[in-house]
Image 1 (tube, one colour):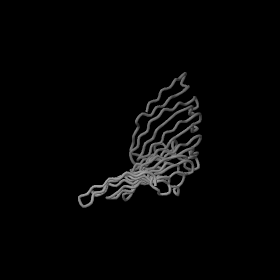
Image 2 (tube, rainbow, N blue to C red):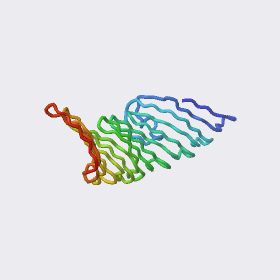
Image 3 (cartoon, rainbow, N blue to C red):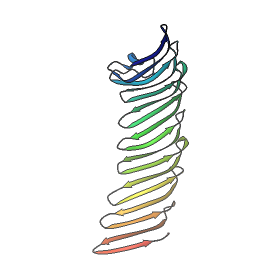
Length: 226
């Protein structure tokens, strides 16, 4: 930590304090409980920042970043150490959550969740009330892959559900809500049947083709509507 100041006749006029890559084995509560309202957790943490103080030792402005145990808090302060804005990012194996505060700690204005597990990927945005603004996610489970795009209130914009078996892959497309199917596509890929079929919202074929192999005979077909 470095302290730079101007003095006249022993009176400190102003000071600047910089924290550069400060680390310790003490708890966050012991080191900086007056700086960030983070739940104290013993262990290694890092801190860096820059603060400016007036002649009375009151913060004029400043910023700091504190990292501890998968959580990173970044804050910008104004006069009197009033919070201007801050983000608190928590990372686990399955997701990264970033919460933004403005004006005061606890005044959450938005939250972003990034999903990053092997079975779930996505990016979801929430407003100050925790209501979804927009987002998308892909879920993989038991041979089924569901990809969905959401609007305000987690209203469905569109989605595809793809189910794969040894013989075929079926993809169903939804729009507006999960009860509204707009199309279905089926790809055949068995040893005896190859092809691609497209169906409308009512399950009526729009177009397609297939090739079948049976008893040494190969038959190929091309289909139109109906």
